[in-house]
Image 1 (cartoon, rainbow over the protein chains, first blue to last red):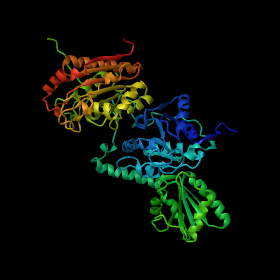
Image 2: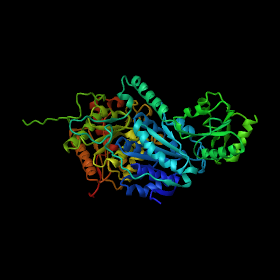
Image 3: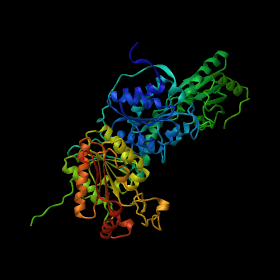
Length: 360
Length: 248
């Protein structure tokens, strides 16, 4: 077996993949269920010649990340639920300053302290939060350890393409599970590759200013309004990612991401064996929301089944907009329990029998 | 008669107005930092990090690499820059509200981790840019817009003294200067120079607090503001060197 093919826990695979993607700055603070990332980085980063810092809090971690990103490094900060709430202000500053950086939220159950088990209750935090102002990030939602690894490399590429923060969101189940993965080869990032990053100037050069990009736009916010709207449009047009499974002829289409989408995949397979036309739209990005995935839904579709570990059903609004409210939306919503594939099929049968209740 | 020409560094573009109020201490303190870097041959390589308030006006006056960050987070940001740019002199130039109030944990923890950065903190006893509210360094009895009857110890606590909080901490350098007289300005410049020397020597965290006037929010003339520093502020915040690694 090649050295790059290993069995790893999701959180540790994320850390290793980040280092192999050229990340040489990490900040973190202990919080379950993502502490393995901090622990892994605390020995591995030094081997790679980088900096891993356990900060006094998430605020410091986020702003050290801001500084490292301003200096041109590939930087990473990770947290979970309550800790990720503390990143919000810094995310707005990263957006406003056009800084590429990668942040990770390993979501856990509950508002307030909640508990440490898996959940998908941070959807809106990542999709619609991101601090004050007109903010939007790019948000990737891997559903396996391999996809975590692949998404880390992608996250840095997107961050640097758009000069924008990218968030990887996955739940505790995926962070904690061990799976076989193929790791990328080790690569180095050239910290001097960007003209815009602070590095000290040469004689005759002008100083670079990393601050609100709006200050440099024509007529400040007149120019910035267009600049940011164009950027968001480019992200929305170009970066929708999804996986459709048997959607075209499906009578019920599940919509899910992360651990829930894996369960749905099994449900689609089993339902089809029973002759039930179930399909799945798996969201690989939640921002931009993959509206294009919904174009494949055929005329036979009787309803959408949102499968989500969220008490509110946080994804429902986005699904309603993606379908222009033309298809009834039903839900199989849990909180800390990973959905069950048999129940996914049961709900689909209820939808087809007219016995299910719409969530909107 | 011998004359001496005081000349600001070329890159501190004196043609561009900073927007500081008349008599403001920033004009002197920030310039000291840039002069020191210039004299050490480090100005081009330097990276300065600003908070959001009056200090950040330097970002447009100095033609070097600068980072503007969130309120209270300049020291954390500077530490992040330095961790990946070890060859560059990195300094945070911040106010007392940022470093002793909202971002206090980063001031203390950057010292605990002995982050190899230089921090210059303006102590003018008020939140200047927002119109003169009470700061951690506001003196007892001092009237501000948010302590209109004067700061009260029983309600607001006592003025915060960073030299007491960092006493015994294993950092490279800690000093407090003042710009109330030419002699003290020169002394403060020596402190700032020492702070940068320590950083370039990789000795770790160096902090220089500087007592400075805010005539606008103190409601005093520039001249009377300097008198107030001498007669009232220095009583509470004595100037001098407090920690110097290798010197007992």
